[in-house]
Length: 220
Image 1 (cartoon, rainbow, N blue to C red):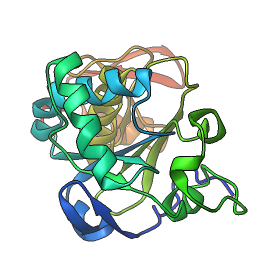
Image 2: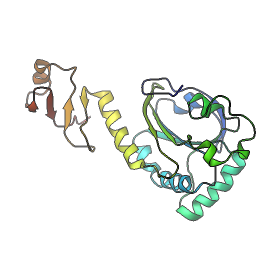
Image 3: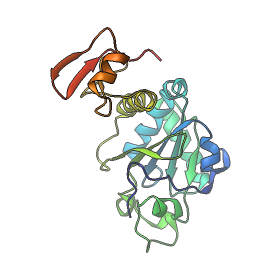
């Protein structure tokens, strides 16, 4: 069964390019982005892994860890990293999980339970459903799920934008409107009554509709 927002991200132990990890322990008190790939040495994923490496400082500033997953063994990940660096200019600077028994892909609903055998005998097309992005909060709950086709590279700038929203709205009783960017005005959450909103925002707020109340973003 596919995971969705609010579910606990399944924990696992796995070999990665940076050694064995326990996923929940590895996350710790941070946020995390887990993004999956159908196989190593695939063209679109090569561009994605390189781009993620280039913007890792942006995730670091948001206290968000990055981790990738592919069914290939760690040795293949190492050789793939060389290709990524030579073609994209930046080698992966975050762990890549080796899901050689497909257990993690199955736990996250990305492959059916009956998949088994040598992962390198499967084609990328057979693993086409390993194109997910999961954002996991410090509470180990899934906060975002994105699924992309193999032919469309993922927009990781959008993932950063969503993390800004998630982190802001986790701390304050607000929501963010369409196309919102950090620093722009936000929406007062529906759980906040008008009286409570007037007390919280004595300088006032815009109210173009009875249920739409717009205010400057909280500063902290």
